[in-house]
Picture (cartoon, rainbow, N blue to C red):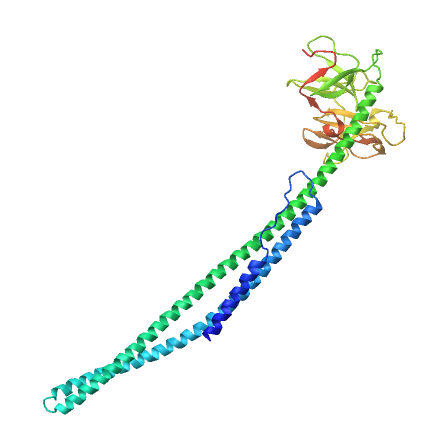
Length: 410
């Protein structure tokens, strides 16, 4: 049985070694991706196929190792059974040896008794001496047998210990392989997550690029309109003097302020007319201006159509007299119009915004509280507006620097 068991272990080890030697379990070379660079589907698929093949090779090796472990465990159980049987046999022999030693002790006692009787019977002494010699020979033989059994038991224990050590080493390798497989799964999941994030970022970037291109095209068209179709002021001067804020074109002026400590400049922008004025924090800001109402000052008036003051509108109510809101197409605005710095926030009435006539309650922002504008009653003409966005509308509330073509700012 020992020979057959050893052959079984050797065969299993050779089989596992052959699988490990013939299997290509080296980690695949993965394609690397750079942030901001689109990932090619072929390269991603190539990574997945390499990882799949590597995982299958690892699985075959793990299965072979599992079979070897199972065979070693069965052999260890057989050896433990044999060891138990040998231990029982050793115990029996030890008990027999103890009995024999007791018998020898008894014989020695008898020998002593016989020695006392030597003087009485020489023949009896000789007989006892012969029996004693025989017993000593038997005792020596039994002692030799016991020592041989003890030696065999120690050798068996050593072999069992060696097998246990081998099994522990195999378990360690299997654990390492399982850990490697888990790590591989984790890296695959991470790669899939990163690929998904890159694709989402690429989609977002494409959308933002398209939106920015649309905004640039719209602003370019408006600026071209300013350059090709200048209007004149009340004195007949055309709006051709370019005015820049923070190195970006704001619009065109027909004249510069008079030479004095301060002044205001009327500018024709892509969103209508504004008044540029110097602030008190080394800045410059835009004010509301209507060329049809020369004495207009300050800011445009914006109210809200909801009690949370979250839906801004421009409203003309009965208390302001009969409206003179003219458009080329009924019910919609013709062009965009800026309403700068209204109560701390600038708004834009965008092109093609629907104009409605309603009778409702309107609200205003009064010291950061949304309150009813109770003087606005009766039928009201309402035009929704949106907050000024420099990226979309090309203008800002406030500028830190100003430059004018043909002039030096002192």
